[in-house]
Structure formats: structure tokens, C-alpha cells
Image 1 (cartoon, rainbow, N blue to C red):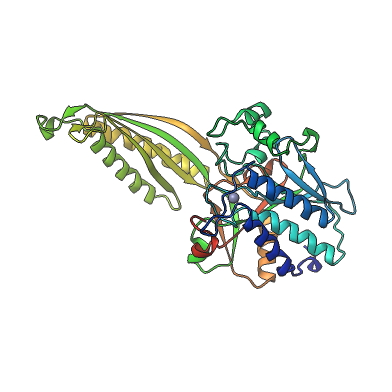
Image 2 (spheres, rainbow, N blue to C red):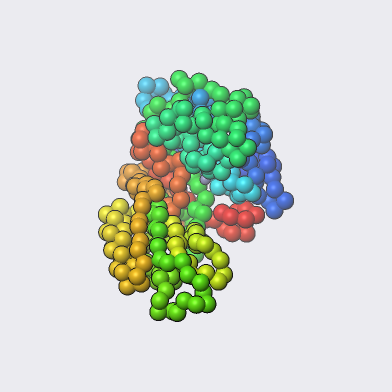
Length: 388
Ligand SMILES: [Zn+2]
């Protein structure tokens, strides 16, 4: 990027944006409770529209409620640079999370306005709908929908806990826009986000250059033994599905440690019959495995499946493994990463490369163009009341 663009933003104005956003859906512990398409979401959307107008951006809203603010370039025929993230939050979530990504984009545009900088390409600031998937249980809904990962009827029919559909909620807050306004192209997509992990803080780095988003597998593991009474059944006669599962999980964690950077989690178990004095006959659990290298993850999964069968044979149990869900790794564009690294160095900030363990809207954006993400440290006490 030319050096004249490496200018400073107006911190006071940016802080004003963040402060105002932090008031909309505010919780007692300084976090935010701003579920997608709720009244609080409507309020911050209305505010964003005003900010877009003040910044001279043309506002459009598509049929998924995604909001766009467009600043024209010298050459309106060039594909735009898109900057953004999401303004919705988890229940009692953080006030920075995706909010910074939208507001940082807005401040970039305002800074260009201050200096009368006209870019070649148009710039579009975007606020994607329902990134969190907290109210409507499909994360990254708005970005996934415009990139043809979900079709319209699927999106419109998703219901929240009260049975309200996405479509109804969108209508209720008055944010049903037009299909023709969906983002259709982007030369670049940039997203600033809180890290949501401890790596930057732990390594005392200021900027995380995000190499991509880890690939992920969810496997349903069903271990079948024999249900028996605790008293009469001798230890050597048991086929204890829980004891067998425990040994399996321990082996899986050992395998995990032999692959650098691999992350394995078992966070959910169903023990049957789940009674104190009955030897468990059946235990079902979910295995979550993540890595940024798909080939490595696949190799680890093969080894894990094999180890599960072996352990079952030793324990006299049987095991079935079914893939519940898989999401391949997304690697961001090398040129964009290079530009982020260069800018970081020019600003005299410290950096490290890392991979996102969580999903973000940028996951879907390589569909349009060269994508990159910047993480900033998530300081526990500062970032939220609770998580972030
Ligand atoms: Zn987020």
C-alpha cells in the first residue's frame, strides 16, 4: 500500500463509536447482550445507518439484513474493497468482538474523508447478520447466505427458541432489504476482530496476522458395553462402556500430543442409563478435532479411529464412529497477509501469525476475493464481562 494511506485514525471519534455501541444492549458487567435481530440489534443498526450517512456512505440492505455502506472510488467499475464484521453478540457477550471490525472500517473511511483521500476502488463497510448463531442457530448466517453456502428458504425458516423465524424477526425490526443489494463481488475482504484466545496476550504481541481458520471435525462416538448391576457383577465380568470411553479419550489425547498444533476436545457425554449403581451399558460422546492443515487433521483422525477400535477390542466393548459435521480449513490470501505484516512493521507494532480456532464471517469471503484478518489481543478483564 502507498505510504500516504498509512496515516493515523482519529482515536477520539473511534472511541466515541465504540462507546455508543457499548451502550446498546449493555449488561451489568460491561458486556453486551445484543442478539441478532433483537430490539437492541435494531437500535445499533439504526445508529450504524446514521453513521454511514454522516460518513457520506450510501447505505443498502439486502434480503438477509446485511448492511452495506459504500464509498465510491475513482473507478466505480473496479471491484470494491470490503471491510467489516458483525454487530450482533452472544448472550451476555463482549462489547468488542466483531463490533470493532465494523467500526474500524467506518473509522478508516472517515479518516480518508478527513484527508480527502479518494481511492481507486470503491470501499464497502459491511455489518453481517447473525454471525454469532446465538439466536438463530446457524453461525455466520448473513455471510454464508450471500456466498451461496445457505439458500434463502433455509435461512428464512430458521427459528429461535421461541419459534420466531428469521424472516419474521427481520420483518419485525424492519430490516428486510432487497436481494439485488446482496454483495456480489469483492477484490479484497478485511476483518478486524478480537482474538478470543490467549495467544497474543501470552506472547506480548499487539497484532495477530491470521493465517486462516482451522478445519474442524465433529465425530459422534458410540461405545456399547453391557448394562449390569454394580453389586453382583465382578470387575472382570464387566463390559463398562464408560471405563472403556475413558481409556479411549485418554488415548486420543495422547495421539493429539503427537501432532503439533492439533486440538482435541471431548466436551459432551451421554451416559446410559446414568444411574449411580448401574455399570454403564452405552456411552455416546462427541469428539471435536481441529487443525489448520487438513491433511494433518485427516491423518490424525485415521489414527484416532484405529485407536478407538483397538481399545474397544481390549475392553470387550464395541464402538461406532459417525461424522456429524466437518468444515475444511480456510487459508487466507498470502498477499493480504504480507500487506498486514508490512503495515504492522511500519507502525512499529509487534506481531505474530496465528490461526483462528473459531469461525468468522471471513471464513466465507474467499468466495469473492482475497481475504485477510487481523486479530488484536483479548485482554480478559478489559474485553468483556465474561468471555472474549
Ligand atoms: Zn465475532
